[in-house]
Image 1 (cartoon, rainbow, N blue to C red):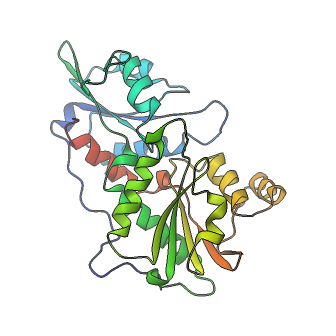
Image 2: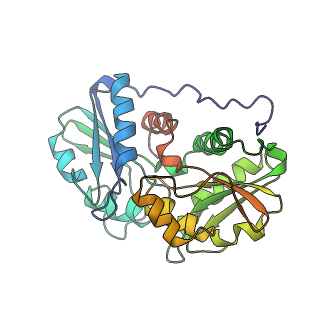
Length: 295
């Protein structure tokens, strides 16, 4: 059975409740897309969950690239305090430059800027991205264990006999893009749960396509470190792992999983999980970020 080390709780620890939460509006900010249907789903999923908990005056969804736009949502809010949590994996151009500049947290080219603004009596806080939070390690581990438990053919492997690969986008244009993934790899390696833990990328080395030959064990779990189960997760990664493109597109059109768990490639049995951004545990990571004064 794929089980984690003794004493590690797969459940999600209790998150703190932000101070003065009943006078606070929480905004979940996603990238959004006008081309990729479904990329907005995790934002609405986690907003609905946190709204149901009744902790905040309001919980609102907002996006950078689609409606409702973050600038329009902010203009409608009248609560004394506003907390914006970006549902992004890494802290790159959008989260650290474009968005804070558009929202007035920093001037173009400014490096020493505050994540807190005051507009009259209203305080607006802009947190770090969810992908950088240490508690995301638990979400990653949950995804890894969940996919094997759901598809235990021919049997569930022991973690010590399994290679874990965390798959991200990566880009040579922004060195920050891979840092969040590399940090999570370090945190999971330190727990000594799996035989090996490695990063892999769409656009950088090591490549996702090389997983079958890079893995040193016969059992491999791949967890996509993306917010949504969009085209990268549903199409690009399965194709890079060796699934024929026509098969992937046919399954996608039929509403079927584009990867059959597990599938053998190059003598390796590969399980492929859903994106971390749709895991229910992300709601508690958001809550923890909202309760932490942004630095």
